Length: 207
Ligand code: FOL
Image (cartoon, rainbow, N blue to C red; front, side, top):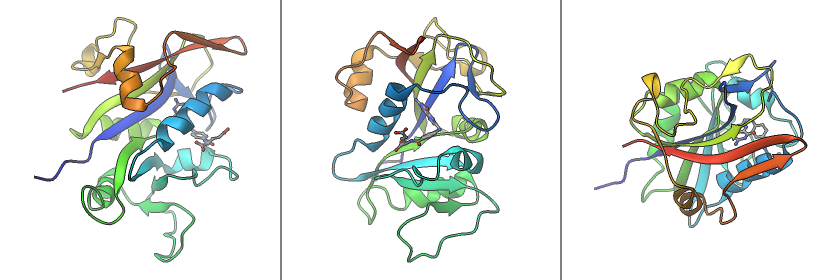
């Protein structure tokens, strides 16, 4: 039987689940945090990882960094022009999250493109749609311990208690050893401080 494609959300959020402001990240200069995002989404074995994002998130990424290198970039947009099938750079465009997942699923398992891990990298609309899908098993949350002004929010609250409540019921924070094993990040654990901002890397899962 063929393995089903699993989806992992990766997000950095404040304790009030803020993730964005004015079309960009609420903070600047969390370089080690961004380096973690890059390493984790890049790290793979045989295959190549995929990053799925909404059109606004695509727009928010600096032109010099997009498409994100070494990863299969899939942008969900109803209006972006599709790149010609022959072109190697530029993202793949899917008209819905459903279509994006179908695209990846058809290249998962034994066939062609060998997608290894699939990451949903935002923003709020795409996270919300992804959380409603059974394929979404895991959230890699960077819990930002300081407050920033935000106008965009993660759709569920994964709180300090480690157990999801309300719309987050069924989600549980996993021990840091599980985070290390899944991401390959040997060094993670505890609070990181960067330029006066503190944060913690967490992994949440549901069955
Ligand atoms: N998850 C986490 N943990 N932190 C984030 O900042 C984050 N950001 C997004 C989604 N999930 C996240 C969406 N926003 C880049 C920029 C914005 C962005 C995601 C990625 C970006 O340019 N990444 C480059 C590295 C850039 C650099 O070195 O400064 C990359 O190659 O991944």
